[in-house]
Image 1 (cartoon, rainbow over the protein chains, first blue to last red):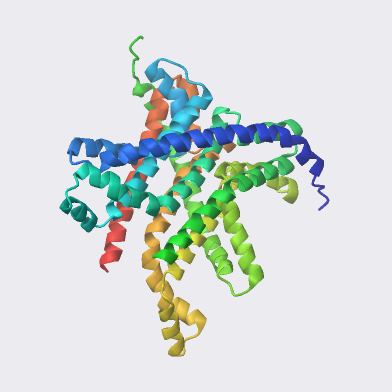
Image 2 (cartoon, each protein chain N blue to C red):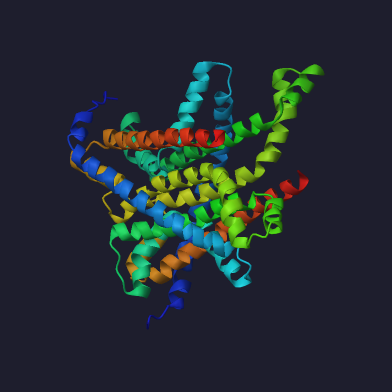
Length: 221
Length: 221
């Protein structure tokens, strides 16, 4: 088969892809930060002693986990503005959708982390006179963060991949640039392959960190 | 702000389109799960092979798919693959190929995780009884591993159902694509996309409840 892979095309599109990479990184960092913070509060709601709060937390998590992320993004861009009476930019809509989605998934990581700490830890802390809140903050949480670190890095990998869906809303991130370039130059093979490789280079260090952390923990255990 | 007049009736009038879309979603998902399991078996066998070359290919395959977004795979199969193979796939075929190759990587990890979770002693015991490696795998290891693999397998399959919504970007008439059509016919994106979210939620929630029952049965057995 005589297809000539045109490497000069790859070089030519790199500056444009780089602009996309910056937007992808921006989206990634924002959504991960907001999602992790928000997810923590959702997990507290999930384990609250008050049934209505627990139900609200659970509904939030189930809703965002059982609906495809792409639908969530489209909903926040096309449907949500009607509800609030104000148009959102594609970037804001995407950031909102991905952040809430990340919050739902990380809430479950926090929750399983908190529940994995043995009862004895709570009892011990209480026995030396700590309040429930103090025990949670000073005894339970530090252990949760350590145990859950691999799960959080995994989530970071997922979030990076989800940001590519923002291309559907025309956010000018990496995938969007790839799509536009590929229809401009009629070189989908070179361009889409390059986009894939750029994602790989961007995300692989995170995956590697995650499995390294997992290995280290298994050795300690 | 003017009070928004909800009208689900206008959207529901197009229920045959939604039904058609639901069928499309089920078709892509079922085919991708089926081919994904077969492919996943092959990839897992390579990943755990005693030959370095096969092992490297298996690992590279898995890492590639774990570290690149699904939407890149969809576009690559639809737009770039025909350039090398001279075979133009339709949107359905492209979506199934993209989703099945991707899920092969994830199913392979499920299989490997399950098999490697069985302690070495089981292999050694089987070998001591004079069983071959293949026999030990088939009669001792797999039956035990299968039970542990159910939960991650189900989780992976849900991801496939959710990811099938990406086929809309190739203009295949699954649920999301049909919804987009309805939204532009009726000018009712709020109702349409909310309804769409609800349909996905119901579909996945029912499936996950069924999976829970199945899992519990298996744990008891």
